[in-house]
Image (cartoon, rainbow, N blue to C red; front, top):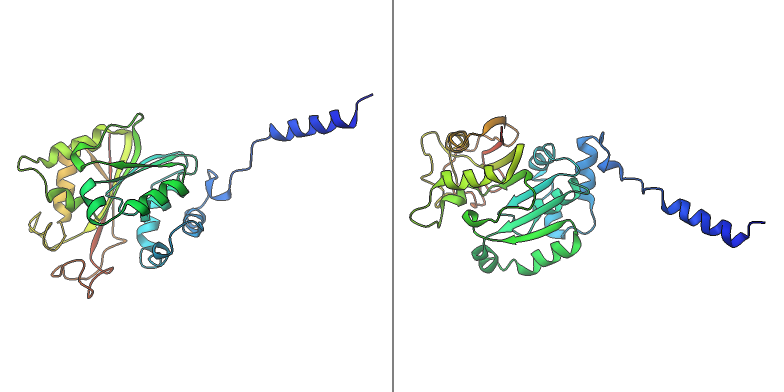
Length: 254
């Protein structure tokens, strides 16, 4: 005769063998709206980041539309982690590396916010390294994201800095078929890189040329962040902040 204790033990063991149901936003067929809503709704996100969600909705949608559960993502120039928090939720059981140069961490006093991010999200790791000295990952990235910071790679670099060396570094750390997602503040045609350290803008044509020269394919040039703003002001000017004309690009490693 089987004892009640034996039956209870058998039931516990059988239940433990059943995998936990994945949350709806991590399902393979989850809609973009479902995934975005779940990512922004996470209760552990800092309040000051939540306050920016409405203004950044188009950018969030664009970014997360190119990321899927299980992805390994590098968030370059991540600041205090606005995009990292969202990416962390969107990749589900994937991983996100949140990078900043040491000079940024020190100047903007990012340490406590970054530590809180890593503590809140087990699938996030912090990288503190210059743009040109980012160590190779143990496994190549599926996605590299640069949100409004590509222009900064032209600033405060050694005299012998070569942008092609930097873009080649990104390419070497991506899987074949992996993508680099770029959002940044556009400027007038013909300006190129002349305003990267003054107005914090870079010409879209220059960004496209940089990546094509390194062998990337332009996979998506989206108008979702474009505005009629005239490119004449510093992007931090209150008159245009949050309303600048921005590019939204996806480059694919063949």
